[in-house]
Length: 99
Image 1 (tube, rainbow, N blue to C red):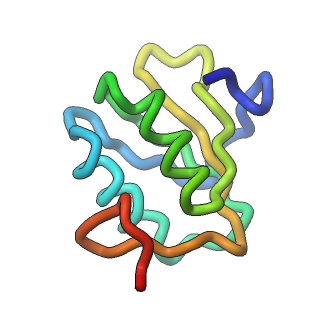
Image 2: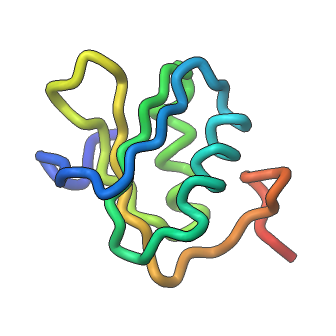
Image 3: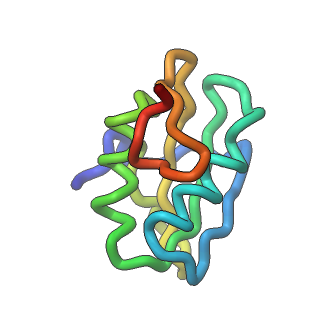
């Protein structure tokens, strides 16, 4: 998926998900952004090969704005901007909305 913005803005928050697979990666991301304000730019370091597919899908589901891969870093880094109207997900299952 191509980035929404050609260059990613500087991060307000960086989440290191190195070595984590999809569900654990999203659980860490969810926990780290829980108290962050809408508009916060998050850079997520994600080595899971599924991250380029999972992260945009999760952002679409929750309402956060996926900004795409961050160029110029030796590690795989992806950017998103937190949305004020984001839909919450279950604490134990980031792919499921909160009832």
